[in-house]
Amino acid sequence: MRVTYHLNSRDVRAVASEAAWAEAMGYDGVSANETSHDPFLALTLAATATSRVTLETHVAIAFPRSPMVVAYTARDLQDLSGGRFRLGLGTQVKGHIERRFSTTWGSPGPRLREYIQSLREIWRAWDSGERLNYDGEFYRFSLMTPFFSPGPGQQPQPRIFNAAVNAYNCRVAGEVSDGLVLHTFTSADYVRQVVRPNIVAGARKAGRDPSAITINGGGFIVTGPNRAAIKEAGRDARRRIAFYASTRTYLPVLECHGFQEIGQRLHQMSLEGKWDEMGNLIGDDILQAFAVTGEYDEIAPMLLERYGDLVDEVSLTLATKGEAEQRQIKRIITELQEAT
Image (cartoon, rainbow, N blue to C red; front, side):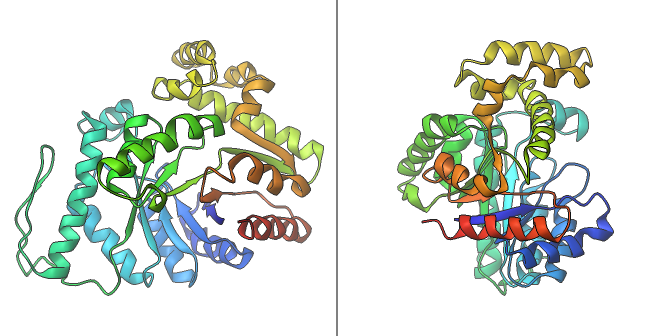
């Protein structure tokens, strides 16, 4: 099983050293998402400081950017990194697309499918020199003169992953993507009952092998060197679970466990600005459903028991204090990587 690390540096000047540290720890991949920084810039810095790990946007928000803009950036990162770049794309939710990015929202699943298809068509045109011709409902590309074409890439086309929570976007992954990035707010039951069956349905619709679709996930991981550390990590996990559960887009995940009433209450509290109180609604049953909890010596077998037959890669990002804890985390990484 591959093990990936998520970059946490809030200071962009620290990204390169953090990526180098993650590679030295033995991680297989380093990812960056689009929260308070641009993920492509972070991975450009990471590419200059590493030589082995994959560099992955988990995820970049698709719709505020034209596929043409992303095609150029992804191609450059793929060549810069020597073929180590993976493009992870997400739709975000309506409020953020319209009010944070000030762009249009509509038909996110079908639009995401076309986005991925058009990226591949743009790269194909560059590699082959043939005419660019993508004519979809949401995206149309037909102009590419030699002056604006970078020509054939030095590396194969980047692999494309799409994020998904709902069943439709899981089918999109099966149809057109190389892999699926699971949201942290996902449970093993939801992966088993909703995610994997829809990946299979999408792949079969497109005449593809479902087993070729890589799944990256693992949910919330609550761990530490002792019970005191785990208790503190559990409080943070409850706050984060409450935040995601308050978003109506994620209601299907709650419904899988019969927690929809809690989701409705959390949504109302979010409208009232009661962010500091929301974590109190997350009881042990909800924490157990969405988080794997155990000490460092226990966590790898527990992760494998819950997700070993459901995901191909696990996202494991742990804060460390001192060399002793780093040695323990290296052991966890190795134990997961050696699992079959």
